[in-house]
Length: 151
Image (cartoon, rainbow, N blue to C red; front, side, top):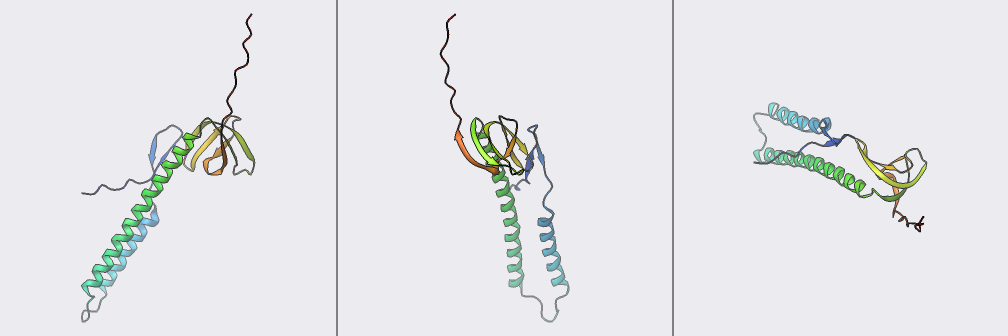
């Protein structure tokens, strides 16, 4: 028995996962293929029926297309988790990049919010930067303690 591959998930700022709706195009292509196959069988010439080898070949192609769609969905889910892990690893690091507002951002990453569009880094100045917009990552400068003055 095979376990179905879960549909994609998104995480809101609350940390709770919410299941998203499946892609309507993926369902449409499999439905379309089945409709074409049924129409081909319904309207075939009874004096010259379709070769069973050809039908098996078409079914094999259909199964491959369906599995490729599942593979793409699994890859998208994996990529989303990789982006989240990458964003979390940037907390405490200095980053630079230009956001969608075309303004250059530079600062210490103080947090990460997991948005539907992808992880957003929160910088120490309060601005946010999408992980895909980061162009430079550096270690945060270490703060050297000053000399202690004895009263």
